[in-house]
Length: 489
Image (cartoon, rainbow, N blue to C red; front, top):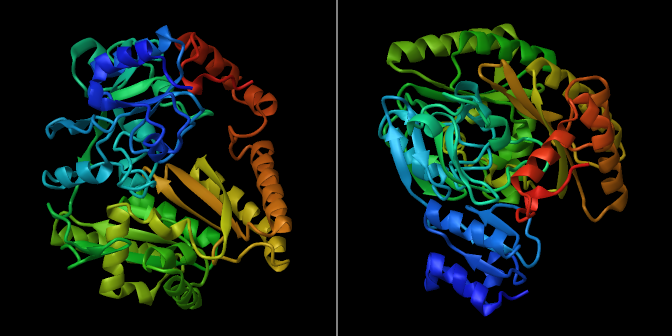
């Protein structure tokens, strides 16, 4: 549906002739040629004006920033935020940064390293927006963004500008919850569809101490970034254990000691993918690592503030691992490979290949919650995979699951995979059945409640959140101009 000329002119008057397009030869660069128009606002005022015009003409809009994913119905106004790419402020004293949507995580991290700071980069990678909500490799010491998002500037689906937390009462960005009422649960919605209607135009994110160098010594090219040298007072290792219980015992001890800068429960297949550049290398490295591992394991980085601090952390790490029967993978003690995986997991480019390993497609069940419960659930889900492996329907990828501790193990994330050939309908059906059964088991046994299941069952168990969320969205978006405004029930 093409915009009427007079409507097009209204939008053009907001953003300028060069920042709006409805050319069917250009729009396919944005996923589709069925959009009504693509518009590039340059600031909050322009975003607000565009949203109000969408309400006036009953046009659905969809904002994107780094553009990994999203819902793209036909005939929408696609709002590309790439012109909003500024780091507004880095407040070293109060340890927060304020960014616009198109500031990517690697851009912000590079500036923070110069100041001895870092932040929670999400597992999707450093090429994603620094405003992205989620969890990542450094959750052990930085927690996740349900804690790290501070004040937020938000243009509602009706075109009102809302400044949350301290920003709304004092023009300061230091707190997302006050003084005054908090709307954090609306702005950081985790329920389906997992996004808040409207547009985030600025956000403050919490910063943390960075004990490493002011400039990370990166060399090489994607997907094989290496370190020209291992930074002083830093070390990366992978430890495997005789059993999940032993691995968990070590995780608890390391969390209580607070010695790990990072702790990620990669399995051998994921490690192999992260330190190789092609499928042939990946398969050879996996076979090599699989001969060394004795069972499930995790990857750790320790980072000392001084030689003495590093020596202490290393000694505690090795003692806790030894008491749990853990063994270091000698292959990964090679300085080159150690540098590769350290670089991948601090700069968060480790997702480049790990989820696209050779051997076909994969289905997964990601869960967050109390770490001991997520592990107990994953043990059962892993056992349920074995018959599928024996029948040759899924690939034995060297580990039933992966996960990591959040806030030194107070919480945790676990994700369990089934890798299979998408051309095999029997395998596909078996994996989907496994996925449904394990989601249901988690819900029935109260390990966690997946919000992606049947709402008539899950909603009542979670205070009817889906009904409340639908009411909130309807109130925020009475004209239905945001695709996130659909009902959940």
